[in-house]
Image (tube, rainbow, N blue to C red; front, side, top):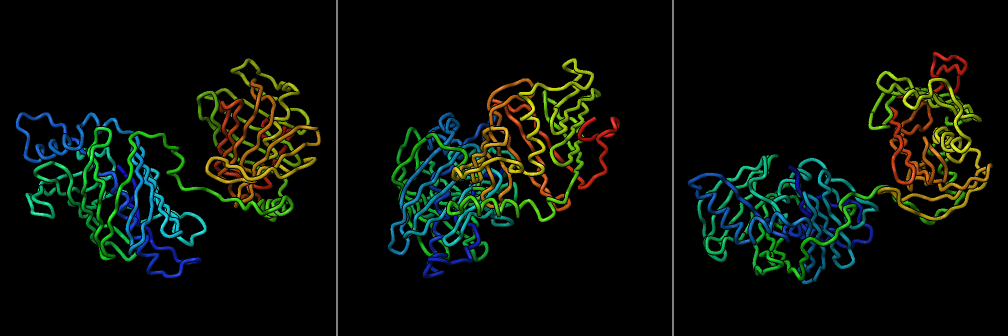
Length: 489
């Protein structure tokens, strides 16, 4: 099981714009390592044995000291704020955690903003001077996933894959403690010290990376107070090769409302200073220099509809023709458009011969070819409506009036300037309302950018998703051959 990232484990930023002292930045970033420990692990132990071992008794005592297993397992999210003392400077921070293993920490160190987070699979962060966040990889990410999982308030030492050994008792700062050696599934080891008198965690020794390679670090936990039935340390002190950095917790919230998107690394970022002409110029360049030269494209993949994912073959031809052949468990289905007429074959709906679709569906069906040749092709007027998000990407929204008078909202990626989304009113596969199409996973086919996924939703309900796996440019397509997939029969 992966866990929330330990803050401060990233490689230091190499671009120091606005940073006067690199050593100062390294120290600031290093001090953030303690923040992943601000909500100390709540542990649990449930063992059906008549004679529990000494380790069982220690863990049971620790669970009860923290607030009890039932209380710990009721925690779904947590938020804490506080300040850290860094060379005489008070640096405020916020940490947010969410089950099962997500964390985000934000700090402001003298105007130098830091973000480090873990979304459950990927550790990432943004350091001073970096224009955008970056993912952490290799040993750094492995250490983060291993050590920070222990710092979530719902962690139990009985988590699958974790090995716990009772290594006796030791005298530490503040008295005697049981020493636990905890090994994560990826082999990273922690030493956890539990007070013999009160059962609360007093100290932890672990491996971390401050940008200079893995090293030992120690965090002491002090000033425990009750918060919503939990005992939480309000003072923590990190000690490493970078020195000693005390941390004071000002507030805790248990089970607050937290937007899950904050744990994921942001996607593309748009430049709000660009005007419409600049955006359109970049859009044309992004589609590929050979885009206008490609006349036909054939592709294979799958389509997800009616609860099934089944094989499909697709063929496109300029200016706006296409045909999709679907094998729905032995039932052949066809959806096609010749530039004027849309038609289908759908045995499941009793349509066994090519049948024209209603006029109100033509616009929605024809939009599929627009994504291949460009959503701006043949449009009447376009205006820039600003920057809006599509999933985690910032995009440029263009309001378009087609030659037929239809209004559309088209969204271009903030960095790649490719179509990401289009919204308009219409009808599709028997449903009428707002049609929302999202496009992504682009691939280069003969110099043309071809979307790998096209998802069509009507009134918020996904009707169909096309997943293109392989494509060929300038394929030999005969629209008149009914035995060969083509734009039309």
